Length: 104
Image (cartoon, rainbow, N blue to C red; front, side, top):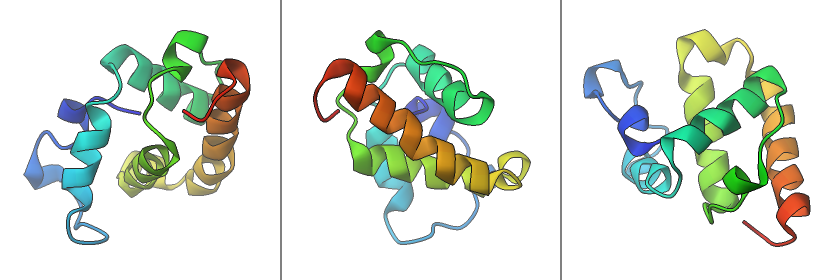
């Protein structure tokens, strides 16, 4: 969802890992999507915006999408919207799957 540099750019601002290796896995996930598309997905989740087919075809996979959602809600400014993120996040993923016709 977010480019790797946005995800794990500065250790001093990161909350504790929910499990060992989480941030390393998150960094790998972030490399699978462009910064532009990462921002588009975040806006789709947080602001109920539509996402383009171009940003749906990034082969990130459900696991990476879910990990990035967990990261989003760990952020103080977004954590208050956790319920919305957990409802809207899977809807965005499923919308992409239906748009491009395959498991992304």
